[in-house]
Length: 77
Image (cartoon, rainbow, N blue to C red; front, side, top):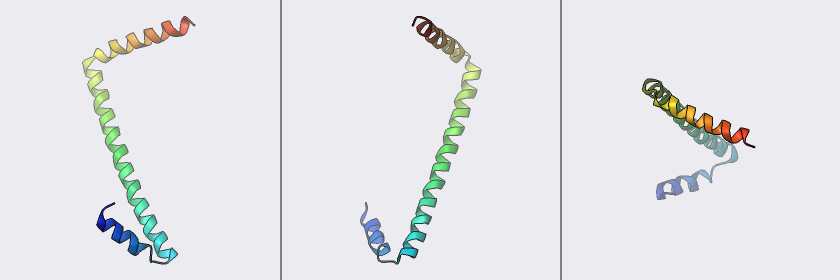
């Protein structure tokens, strides 16, 4: 934790419980926004990769090889 963050924390801990709860809620809320941004970024990346796979066609061949291998392993049990 940086010196600035430590100072803020020390000052925040001097506040009454209701004020600390408000601050904690705001901080947690700001992290949830970050999580949403991360999810949105991953969704865009997945869409990009899926579009690329549809165009290339090579992934379909690889998928069929993997599926065949899974079927062989499953049926041999």
